[in-house]
Length: 225
Ligand SMILES: *Cc1c(COP(=O)(O)O)cnc(C)c1O
Image: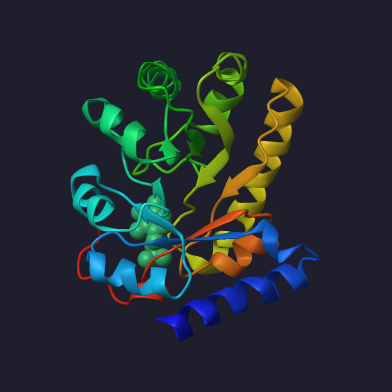
């Protein structure tokens, strides 16, 4: 595990150097969904502190069992009936896919006394099979998003179409959309959550600040979760 983590970090750092970026500007989020607490513990022992989970019920016993200084990131589809538990346990939520959900999380966070960081998930290639804000919706929602007070809007999250060879242009499109939104809304939007096992280097070349890597660290996932 320590060797795999170091190798991944090395690849991220190489991509940073090619892009003339500081390695400290890219967080490696270890996506531990479907893997047991023991796997997280091994990565923790090797120094990893940020882990991503996509289902609240699956994550809860891991969070309970593992060290309190882990930073848990929620990366899955978020139902309203899970929002309160997710806000309580996850300081970072990458999968906020509508204005209504952002507003709801803002209210729940206020009630729970939390200040979560949220990423707005954008359906950057307008795929029928995917959720998320359309680019137009995001621009149209900018003023309402900028008015939210309890959540901190960290930036955009995107999952490009399943074609690693084409991923880079979608990462670039996500960054350009972020730049446009930043100008029009005044939101700072410093974060870009993009890049997974198959394409994280291209994501770093296009400005990713958080790469979400599962299988390249933990191994083959028998079901997609
Ligand atoms: C599962 C998942 C990942 C990690 O995928 P890998 O291909 O295993 O690296 C990243 N982001 C999201 C949103 C996921 O659901």
